[in-house]
Length: 151
Image (cartoon, rainbow, N blue to C red; front, side, top):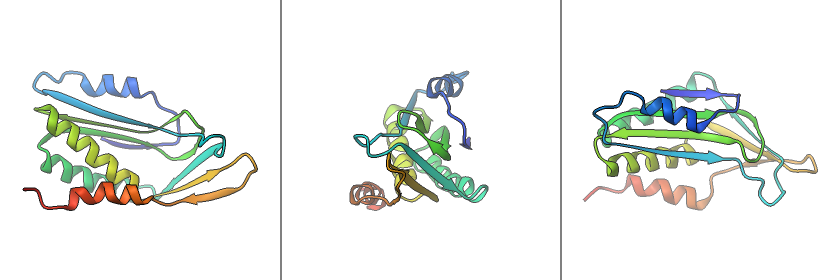
């Protein structure tokens, strides 16, 4: 499942629902990303997406992760719109037969969402000044490791 929402969500409730009736799944791994205040430099984070296109693009990558890591299932919930520090931005859950696949798939999906998913991110500070956010060098390095050939 892939969902974009402009409303706050409860990661615990999403995890509970995702785990329900999984009698054959051996592992579920999750990641929850929170908006940071950046030591007071950010009062709001705003994410923009193209409805339909963004979900389809995330779905394409997630389906690839399902095959690559032999996932039983995945769930991605991502905020759009205005988000205040401390609120959840993203929730990713992966279900697999074994823990390594679940962990790696969750990590892979987060690296993709952080650096390549079609979102446009803007921070606004206490002075009202807005600045667009671009992926950092570490974000590019994180995703590049998935593009290296597997031994």
